[in-house]
Image 1: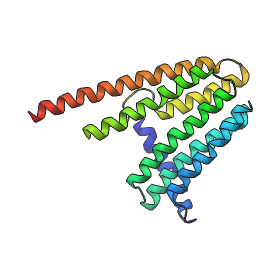
Image 2: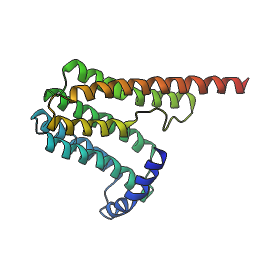
Image 3: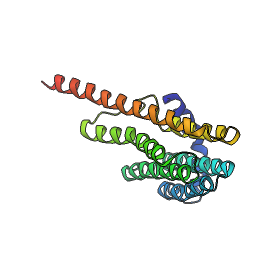
Length: 198
């Protein structure tokens, strides 16, 4: 996953440089990605899967662009990182809400899916704030895997109606496992930190 991150950060850097010439800020791209996230919500609600997929991928691509623009311009800021995480969770909510409204998942499963999707991010944020220990790359099911699974599930749903229900269950289970992995990671590292300080 680290190599993949390094690859796409390097690959998208020229796009960031091109956007910098338009005097667009990374935070503007981040906020725009939230607005773009309303389109997959609407199209999934209307059960127009292909348009939902296309606009979902556009929102995800914009999330990549804000990072490449920040790196290209040197405008990487602490607030920008907070805003980026807020946008990620908001776009995920818009997608899941579209899935519920469109009938791809029931209300209880959509709620479970969203809860389990955001918990690894919450645990990482709180854990890093409390411990000062980075948890980047910890866990088997990070955001890239979640979004990829949703995309794959919608493609399956297009040709095999009813299959997204099972994809949502898989996403929920794997996201929950990732939460446990991160909890154990911080527990172990905090114990080691305490032992070393004694």
